[in-house]
Image (tube, rainbow, N blue to C red; front, side, top):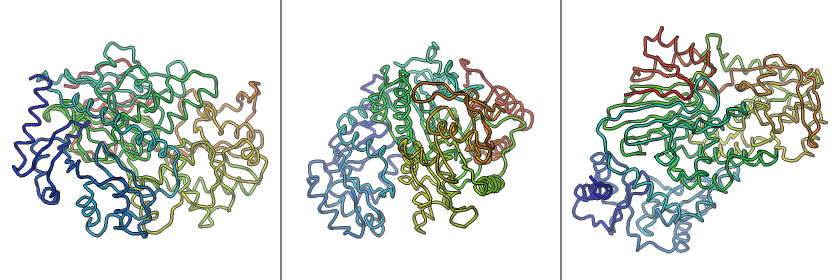
Length: 636
C-alpha cells in the first residue's frame, strides 16, 4: 500500500468505528496521536461512554478528540470565565492557551479546586468554552529552565504543530516487510560507562536509545556515529531514558546535522536534559572548547520532544510501540519497553536502574506485558560490588559529619546536580531538624538549586512517602531554611573563609565546576573532609582520588597551574548510589515478570559487564551476551 493510501485507510477505519451521530471535520496525525476533529456540541455523551476506549482498543492507536474549534471562546473571555468559576481559593498563577491542540493550561497552587468534585469544573470549562482544560500544580520553587521551555513552546506553537504533523505521517506509514529482523548495534556504553547509545533496527525502522557523552574520556567522547549501520537520514526516533549527560548529552548534536524526528522521554527528563545540555554548552564556551552543538540545537531538541507518562503505550515507528516504566534512578528516569511488530518480539532496556526504594524515589518496576530480551546495566556488576544499605550509609554519613564539624572542619560533597543532590537534601534536612547533626550552614553550588526547582515541579514522580509529606503534610525539605544557594565567586570565597559547614557542589566527579574550586581551597587542611556519594567514572579526578592519588593539578582563572596536595580526609559512601548493586541486579532479574530469554549487559567497566553476564548465565541459567562497542547482535 502507498504512503498516502495507508494514512487514508487509518482515517476510514476510524470513521467506520464511530457512531454516525459524530460528525467528523478532519483527522490529523499529530505525532503518535491521531486527532479527530468533530463538529459535535455534546462532548459529554462521547466522553462518558465507551466509544473512545473501544476505538483505541480496536485501532491499537492513541486517539484524541478536538471539539468545535470554530466555537471556542476568545482566550481573554475564557480566562475570565475560569477564574470566576473556580474562585480565588484555587490560587491560579498562570493560564496559557495552546491553540494547536485546543488546550487551556491552568497552573494553580490548589489544582484540586480547579478540577472540582468529580471533575465538575473541568466539564464546565469544556462545555462552555470548548477548550480542553489541563491542570498543573504551581511549583513552590520557580525554575528558569521550565520557564524558558514554556516561553519557547508558546512562541513556536504553530511550528511545533507542523513538526508533529510531519512526525505523525512518518510514524503511521505502511510497513514494507513482514519479517522484523531486529538488530541491536552498540554505538556507545558497552564495556564502559559513558556515551550510552544503542541503535535498534528492523527492516522498516531505526531508533536510538539514549545519545550520551563520555564525560571522563576526551579521546572517546562521542558515540560511534561513523558505523555504516547508523544513518541519520533513516532515523525514526530517539528515546532518552534519563537526564544525565552520559545518556542525553549528545541528543542536540543530531539536530545540528539535520535530524528532524522526535525525542521521547518523560516530562521531568525533558526539563532536566534541557538544563544539562544548555549548561554543557556554557561550560564548553567558558573553557574555550568548541561545543559539539549550539543553544539553537538544544531549542530544536525541545521542539521535537514528545513527553510521555509512565505506562502509556505509544507508536514511535510503523512496527514499534514504546512504553516507559519507572527505573528508580533519578527523577523521571525510565525503563524502556519496545514492542516490535504485532507482538512478535519485546525488548527492555533498563537504562540506569535502582531496584531499591530511596528517600527520593520508588524502586524500579518489574512487571511488563512481555519480555523476550533484556539489556541491563552493570555499573556495580562486579563480584566485589556490595553496596551498603541506605541505613548503614546514613549512619556513616552522620558520623563523618559530626566528627568533622566538631573538629572545626568543612565537609565537601561533590554531587551530580540531578539525583544524589536531592537525595542528600532530604537526608540532611532531617538530620538537622531532628538534631542528629549540629545545625550548621549547608551551601548548594552549581546547578543543584535549579535541578531541585525542577524536582518540585514534578511531585508525582517522587516517592510516595516524600509526595505525602510535600502535598498533604506541608513538609517540603526542598524549601528548608537550612540550605543556602551560592551563585557568585564572592559568596564562594565567604564559604571558604567561614566556619564549619557542609558544601554540596557540582560536578560530582570533580571534572570541573565549583566542586574543584572548593577542593583546591580545602585540600590541605586535615580537619576537612571530602565525601564521594556517586559513581566516579574512570579517568576523572574523582576516580583518581578514590584510587589513592593525593595530589592534583589545579588551573586557576588566569591559566596558571598549581600542584595541590590532599591532606583532608577522603570517604566514599556507595550506599547513596542511584545504581543497583550486584545483589540488587540479581533480585531484579529474579522478580521481573515475565522472565526474558536473553540478557545483555552494558554500562559498566569491561570486567564488570563480563562478570555479571557470566553470573547470570550460571546462576539464572539464561542466555547472555556482553558485547563490545561497534558490535551488532541479531535479536530475532
